[in-house]
Length: 377
Image (cartoon, rainbow, N blue to C red; front, side):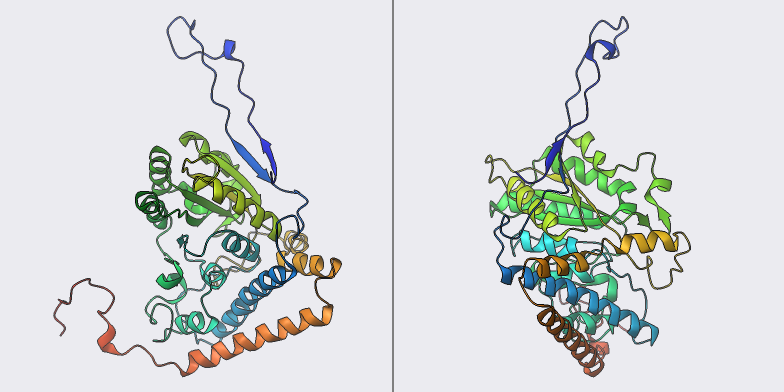
């Protein structure tokens, strides 16, 4: 089994009262079921991945990185308006999770959504055009950076309301259980959103109805400009699965193979392949973002020393080194992949530039289910 199982030590039952007046009755708390996926020693072969699989995953991570680097440049040139929240540093999470799960498993996330969309197969053209607010964008130019959406790939956003996507994600898992289609939903959100009431309501219902859902907090250590240690009474986020009796996983999100192996295991268990019973998982993926919360963030809340130390954990650098050390490709071949990805991203910028702005008459399209729109002036 990937990873190791770590449990909280149950208190001494004799010292624990159930609250009765005389203190005679005692109870023994359930021991939480927590699996730690870190330093598992995975190789691509132990995970059943071919050399081509690893190179494809590496290329996808690189596509996310180069796409967002170019997006940041375009934002500086005022080609992109509104907000822009970059995923740089977290690419192993998106790629590893998506590759491990089924293409039909629904994905929903928050507004730091470009990486997951590209991992699920959205084209750079479609994504960049959306950032530019053009009609050929994935949301027809109406959503922008925070509202990527592609129903054909079972990617359901991109949501700007903090934590608002969590009940929807659990609902999609419930739909899979109801239809008995074998699906398992993946709901991603940041460490800041875990304090929202919507998370707790959704987690309770997921546990109550044995929903095949992975409720995933991407703990990148900062909610906007506030560290998780300063915003929570207990910064060990994985404990949030305890009150709902959920199986819980903690994953090293800077290690591509660790993420892939973890999601393979917990995804199969959540959809009921191990014991015939669907179930939710609470998942803490420990990762890091190298850029600010958004493009307007000066990042004064963390030191240069911290940033430099974290760069040694860069998931793309680590994957590149693995490929070279295991002779899966030459340095020249990897450079060629990088150049190919850069060309693809530059072509997406040209595509976005040439795409028309949404015509005014599309304003009410995709908003109302019926054809009866409000009157226009």
